[in-house]
Image (cartoon, rainbow, N blue to C red; front, side, top):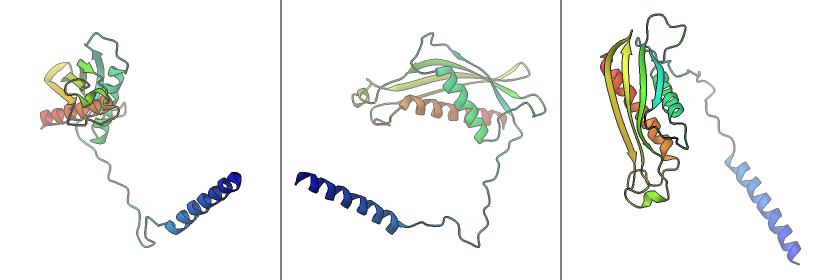
Length: 174
C-alpha cells in the first residue's frame, strides 16, 4: 500500500510541474516590430593600465589578494572604457596597487560586532611616463549591520575598493 501511495505522489508531482511550466508559457522578450539595439560601447580618451599589485601585508591569505585586486581594477576600468591594451596608441596612465591590510572575515562571526568583519585597505599609485601623479587610498569594511549576511564578503570588498580607486583616478584626470 505504501508503495502505491509513493508512486501516485510521484505522478502527481510530475503532472503539477508540467502543468506549471505549460501554464507559465513562453514570453517573447522582443516584439516583432522592434529592432534590437546593443548597448553603446563606452570609450574614454584616458587609457589606464594596471602595472603591478603588491601584497604589503606580508601574510599569506586563503584568497589571492593580488589577483583579486588586479582583476577587479581592470574590470572597473573596462566598464568605463579606460582599460589600455596593446593596440592603443600613446602612453597609458599606470596604476600600481598595494594591499595594505586584508581581513577575510566570516559570515557566521559577523553576527557579533567587530568579530567577523571583512576589511580591505589599499594604496594605489597613479603615474604616467614615470612621473608620479597621485596617491589614491581606499578602505572598505563589511561588518555587523552593513552586509551582515553577505556571503563571500571579501570578494565584495575587493569590488567596492576597486570601484572607489578608479572613481578617484577619474577625478584626477578632470
